[in-house]
Length: 304
Ligand SMILES: Nc1ncnc2c1ncn2[C@@H]1O[C@H](COP(=O)(O)OP(=O)(O)OP(=O)(O)O)[C@@H](O)[C@H]1O
Image (tube, rainbow, N blue to C red):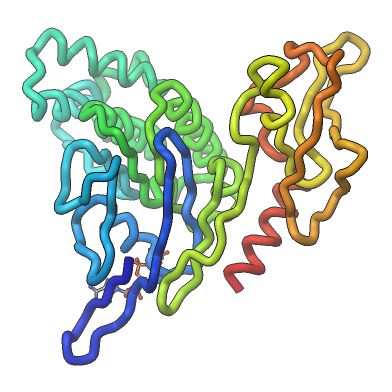
């Protein structure tokens, strides 16, 4: 896609040749310097803006305007202050014509999904900023969107809240299987949460690189082990729970070696005698801090 904007006599190229393919069910993060066009991509996918050239396709269908199938969460949560958390979430269900009792039940389920069970009757002013964002997330899920678009939803929050909300988002993503596009200017967050990180450069905005930031999935039996155990550099975060051998272990095939300079993603074989229970969950297997550091340097270099 290309997007030109401003004075038609002297248009500004905001985005140039952006080509991004997000498989269904993926959590992709989009990072880039301020003004590179991240929010513009958000607006294009949300259907708020039409590209000058090219198109946005969701499931092969061109996006021609906003639709409930695309849930959006932005920095300003936009909750109705006169409605409780439950009633805010119910708003989405009202729009879909869900009858009262079912609405109430579903709103409670969604609040529970985002970790806010017990806060159903609180009003936005009674909730922390972070919890308001979670209500906004639950509300966008009420439309049962196939795609969830989040534009800097954690901006302005303290680091601890950002981390908590990020973990909640990953949990929600895992439980719902939604396709998630998360826009952030926080590189660490992008690497921590995204399975792939699309890195943009500015003027005009382009996708420069797509960096693999984590393993593609859980190991599911011997046949899949070989491919499923992705590592980032030397420090694939694999943890053993065998008594006497607990803790994180870097696991490398003999043929791979750490190359933090380019942040390559290496693959290795899991020894046959390794019981699958020894594997930590995909969530726990996120890159260790020093690997994240390597990826961050790669991304920072791309952005520069
Ligand atoms: N309709 C428009 N007319 C003119 N310029 C525009 C238009 N839309 C976007 N731009 C410009 O395109 C650039 C990209 O803006 P955008 O808000 O998408 O960037 P961003 O990466 O989200 O920035 P930030 O991280 O600061 O939020 C900016 O320089 C903006 O001023």
